[in-house]
Image (cartoon, rainbow, N blue to C red; front, side, top):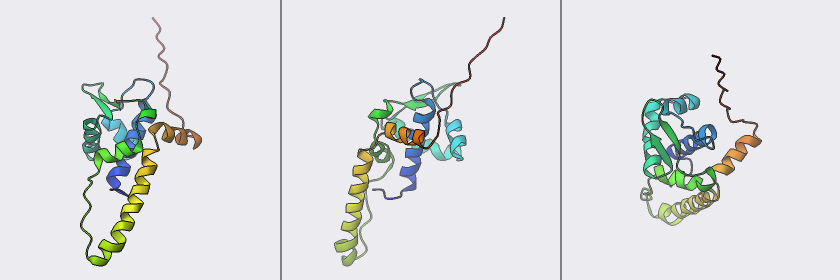
Amino acid sequence: MLLRQDRALLALDIALDIAFHAAGRGEVSGAADIATRMGLARRGIEPLLQALVRAGLLHSLRGPRGGYRLARAPRDVTAAEVVEAVCEEEAPAPPGRLAAAVTAPLWQELDAAALATLRATTLEALLRRAQAAGLRRPTPEALDFVI
């Protein structure tokens, strides 16, 4: 399933970015903003955003102020759900008897251990790691009107 699948890691980064920048305040993150923060092309992350919406992990809002927000609270979204939303489950057939008898089962064990860790990790736990690393959520600028 995974063990360093770029698609899985990128989907997890996208979900964490949305949780970090919009969660708890009811705000949305636009695809262009997400892509800019991650240093990626918007068209490169759109398929992953769509997969996360189809999986019910994100809500998509259309329009000029549209974007994406989490469909559930960060404490209710596991890293495994995010990864499973974008990863294909089919593994290629092992090339030969030795691989089928030895390395394929090893890879399955490693995969199961990684999946168990992802199932035990929520977006909220990852947000706490970000906070422990000194990262702070941006605060919206206060509007000051004078008439």
